Amino acid sequence: MADDGDNTTLAWLASPPGKGGIAIIILAGPDAEAIFGRIFKSAGRTGRENAGKENPTGSGLLLGEIFDGNDLIDQAVVCRPSENVVEVNIHGGPVVAARTLQLLAAGGAKVADHPPQNLAGALTQSYDEWRNPAIGGEMLAEINNAQSSHALACLCGQWSGGLSRLARQAISAMEGLAANSPTAGAGELAEKLEKAAAHLAKMRLLLKSPEVVLAGAPNSGKSTLANLLVGRPVSIVHHAPGTTRDWVRQQAVLDGVPIYLTDTAGIWDASDGTWSAVEKQAVRRAHERIAQADLVLLLHSADSPADAVQNALKADHCKNILRVRTKSDLHAPPAGCDLAVSAVTGTGIESLKKRSVAALGLANMNPAEPMAFTGRQANLLLRAAKSIRANRPDRARGYLAQLLEG
Image (cartoon, rainbow, N blue to C red):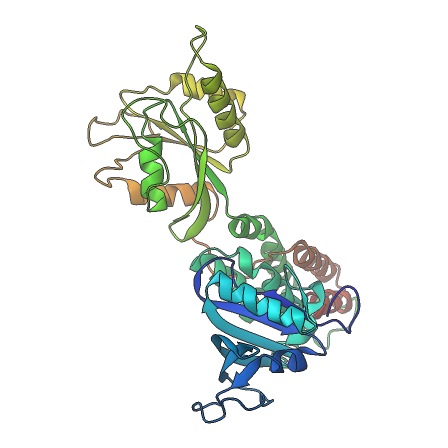
């Protein structure tokens, strides 16, 4: 299971870090049952009549309790997806999860920061009908990066359907075909594989959570809009220009897509030398965030014109910019702006979310559509497509089998 030998038993947190409803810990390796059995007492499948007895083996869900000696740590629901693999579901507090991992480490497990690359084999027995353990292992390695239900659905859909189903259907379509023989519908099948590979960039952006930067002149409403989109006060709002002196970065979800939203200091033209040292530093940091943004929302209002900011953004070579007129409840938006919003009344906010997601290229993603989410997957899909076009179904089947099974 581990890079340093097959005899190592690993434990890792499979759910996202931080507080949550539950925390999931995976224990995998030859000693998984023995290590976990030292700290877990089962209450059985129907009640607590077996409490205090040794942990029974076998599949199914078990309710029980985790102990550190005689000290009760937490209740747990446990299942065994395959041989030598134990999945532990506990309450989602980080202290409980850390304590459980410490107990497993004391029992002989090696605690890892992420799933091992060769975890795929652990999925083979339970899900043999899909025969896609390689995609399953890659899914588990990426699952902590899925920061919204939509991102999670797009990722998990490739294991339970999507990419896995496409590869299996392609293999079936080529069963019994001789090498170098013309394949009916070969071009269409190759196009489907190439399309799935082309989705790699989109899936990587979705899973890394793109950065959306709010830029604009002082007092253009950046901080007010940031607080509204995040859903809680994260930036100080004041009528005096220049209140934000450094960038503030928080997670948000726009129309189902997780993003990092960055509020920056106001940018303006100080050719007259009126900038203080602190203001220069604040503007410099704002430009740094703008330069590496996946999308810039350029805000301006009637009382904070954007001409100087637009000139500054040209120097940053920003290409993906959405121009937003703020404070539409106070001033009618002029012709030519992309959209107008009011963070006070909520006017235009839903449209802003949808337009932002569209500008990122992440609109209307169907979780059931085949989409590569690792470079390995995209490479094998393209190789299989090339082999199909060359009338080499034997090679194509090999690449697709490797895609599924590793």
